[in-house]
Length: 240
Image (cartoon, rainbow, N blue to C red; front, side, top):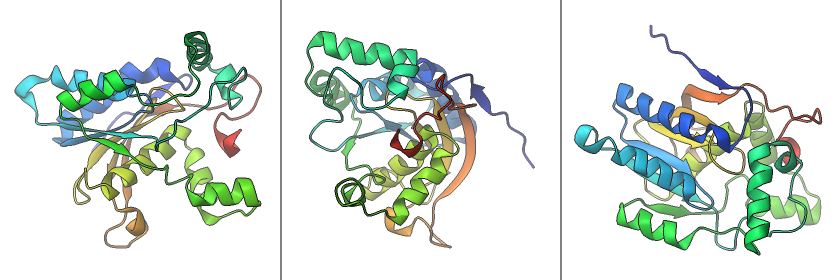
C-alpha cells in the first residue's frame, strides 16, 4: 500500500502552470519515469517544461514530448473569445487581449520557440485532437452526435485538463514518441498553460479500452478543485 497527496488548485488556468510542472517533475523523480507529455498550442508551456527539466542536469534522463494542435491555427483572433471561460478566467482573458493588441490573426505554434525546442531535441507531435477530429465536423456541420463526445464529456467531469492529459498521451503514443508499456507523466489544462498532471500508462488510440493493452490512469498529481466559473457554469463542459 502507498499513500500520496493530491494538490488541488483553487481555480483553473495558466496561473497554475509553474506549480503543475514542478509537481509533475517531482513525481517523475519519485517514480523514475522517463517521459513527460506536455500539451502546448503556442510552444510556451513545452519550452518552460523543457527548461525546468534541463535544470535537473545529469540527475535524470527525462524526455519531454510536446503535443500541439494540427496545422491551421487553434483560434482566429476576433473581438470576442471563442468560449465563456476565456472571459471568466483572468489570465485567459489577459492572454486574449495580448493577442489582439499584437495584431495576431490566429494563434499558431511560435516559430522561435519551435527552433529552441528543436535545439533541445524535444519532439513536436502535430496532430488533430482525438476528441475533435472527423466527429467534430459531423456534430457541428451535420448535427450528428457520436460516442466520442460521451468519452470527452466524461473526462470533463474531472477537469478539461484531465481530458487533455489523456488524449495527448494517446496522440504521443500513436506518433511513436512515448512507450505504451511503461508509465509517463502527462499534463493538461484549459486552453493555455497547464493545471492538471497525471501518471498514466499510455496506449495506442485504437487500443485504449483493450483489456490487456489499454490505457490506465494511475495517479492524479494535481488538478483544479472546481471548474465552476462566476457565471455558475462549469468551464469547458459542452464546449461552452
